[in-house]
Length: 109
Length: 121
Image 1: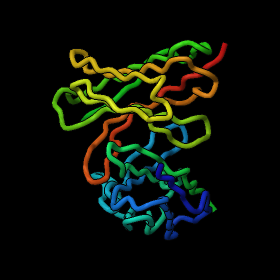
Image 2: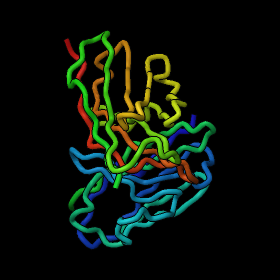
Image 3: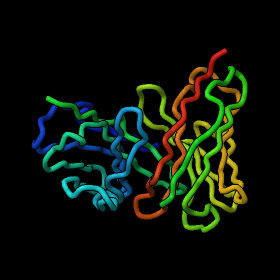
C-alpha cells in the first residue's frame, strides 16, 4: 500500500506569510495527488487536483507542485480564512485505492 | 451546482448495521462521467476512504473494510447508500459522501456536510 506523510504536522503563521506544506508518497504516484482544506466542523474542500491544477473558485494564492513522490502546497500570502487543516490525497493504483495524508494544521501565530 | 446531503441514524448499537443515504441535488447520478463515494473521519483524526459506486451499480471498496461494506445506488431517487455491518466503537466517525472525478488525479468534489455516527449501546 502507498503511504502518505505530511510535514509539518502543524505550523503557526501570521497573516501575509508564505506557507509551504509538503506531502510525500512512499512510492511514485506520478501526478495523482490532490490537496484539500478542512475547517473545524466542515467537510473538506478541494483546492488542488492532479498536483498543480487549481480548482475553480479557489484563490490564486494557493498553488501546488511536484510529481513522483514529493509534492508541495504553497499559500503565497496567508489570509485569515486560510487557518485550517490541509490534507493531501493520492489514488495512483489500478483500481485506485484512495489514501489521505495525516494532515497539516495551520494556526495563527 | 451539485450538492450532496447525508442522512441516517446518528446512533447505532454495537454489532448492528450502520445505514446512511446520500441525496444528490443539482445534477443526476445517472448522467454518468462521475463516481459516488463514501469517506469517513474518526473524531479528531484523518480521512479514510470507504468505497465508491457508479450509477450502473459497479462498486469498489477499501480492502480494509470490504468484508463489511455494501454501497448501492437508487437512480430513481438520485441517491446512493452505505451499509456497514457488525459495527463497533471503532466505526464511530463523521461519514461523508462525495462525488469522485476520475481524471489524472482522481479527486473528490464536492462533499456533503457530513453526519456523525456514534456506535454505542
